[in-house]
Length: 546
Image (cartoon, rainbow, N blue to C red; front, side, top):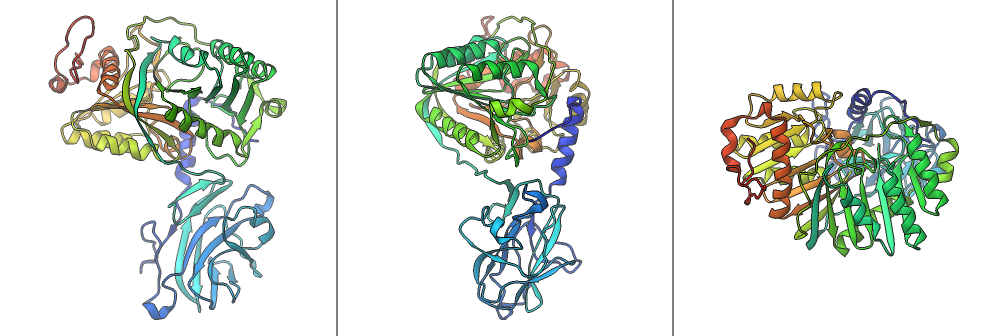
C-alpha cells in the first residue's frame, strides 16, 4: 500500500518535481564517437547491411516489477534471424538462445515474467543478467559487435518502456484517444458563485451515478449519492488514497457513510500505482457529464473558498466516454475496496472552509458546443499546447501555480505572446503560492506575456481553477501546469469549442484579473476592446481588463 509522509504542500510539490526529473526516458540509440547517445530513438551501430543487425532492436524493458527481488523482470528484443546474439551492460553479459529469432522476451525468471508479457514468447537466460532499476545501459550484440543500445535512468515500480511508446508507462495503463462529440449541450459555471450547479447535475440521476475525485468530503454531495443509492441508482465512487496532507478524518467519515449505504467506494491505493495521484474531478449522472477544477469539498464544490471552473455536458457520447474512463480506472489492480482500505488507513484531522462569497457570475443558458474529453497521462498536454499554439487573438490561462517559465504550457503561452496574441497567466495569491508566483511574474516581466498574481478582494478565497480560454474555445479540468500532472497524475479535462462558453469564462477571468491587476500593462488592452454595460453584457471577444 502506498504511504506518503505528511508535510507541507510546498515541500511535497518540490519533492515530486525532483522525483519526476529523476525518472529519465529510455533511449535506444547509436553511440556517437564521443561515447554519448543520440536523441531518444532507435539506432544501430552496424557499418552496413553486411553487418546483419540492421533490424535488430531492444524494443521493451520491464526492469522494476513490484515483486520482491524484482521477480518477473524482462526485456524484449527483435532479431531479424538466428545468430550469435548476446546482451551486455558493462558488468554482466548473457548469450541469447541460438534458436531465437523474431520478437522475443528474455528473462532470468521466465515463469514470473510471463505474467507481464504480451503477445511474445518468453525465453530463459542461462546467464546472470539483472536489469537495474536504478538505471542501466544495455547493448544488443551480434558476433560481439554492438548493434543497438538502450540507456535509461531510475525506473518507478511497475513501469515499463516500449520503443513504440517512447515513454515509461505503469503496468496496466493504456492511453486513450480523444474523440470529439459535436453539438453537445453545455452549461459552464464558476465557483464559488454557483455551488448548486454540480449538485444539481448529479442529484437527478436515475440509472447511474459515477463520481471520481482527489478528495470527497462534501456532506451535500454525499447526501446526493446516498439518496441516489436509496432510489436504486447504481452509485460508484473512486478517490485518491494518499492525497497530499494525508487522508482526512472527514473523508474517512464520508467513506464509511457511503459504504454503509451500499455505495461501491474504490480507493486508488494499491501497488504498483498507475498514477502518482488520482487528481481528476468529475461525475457521470445518466447522460450528463460534470468536469471540474475543484475537489468535492466545501472549499471547492461547496463554494466556500476557491475560484474554480466547471462545466456540465448533457450528451450521451461525452457521458459514455467519461464512464468508460471511470470503469477502466476503478477496475485495475491498484484500486482497493473501501473496507480493505479503511482497515489500515491512517487518517488525519482536517478543517473545513466556511466562508461566504457573492454570486457575480450566474451560469449562462445551455448552448451547443463541440466537446472533447482529454486525459493525462496521455493526450491532454499535447492537445492543450497545440491549441495554444494555434491561438490568433487570446490565450487566457488560470492556474494556482506552474512548473516555472519553461514548463510546456507556460512556454506555449510565451510563444503565443511573442507572435502578438494577447496571452495572460493568472496565478494564485495563496500564502503558500504567493512568493513563487511573484517570482515567476518578475522573471517574465520583460516578455510580451502578462502574468498576474490574483487578489481576490472578497470575491473568492484563492485561485484553484485550471483552465485556458483560447480564441473561441476553452479547456477546463484538473490539470496543473507541471510535469508530474502532465505525465503521472490521472487528470481529466474537457475541451469546448464555443464562442459563448469561451466568453463566459473570459468575463469571469477579466473580473479576477482586475482584482489582482497590478501586473496589468495598460497598453495591451486593445485586443479585447472596451467594457460595455453594467450588466456585463459582453460581445464576442470584447472583454475588458481595466
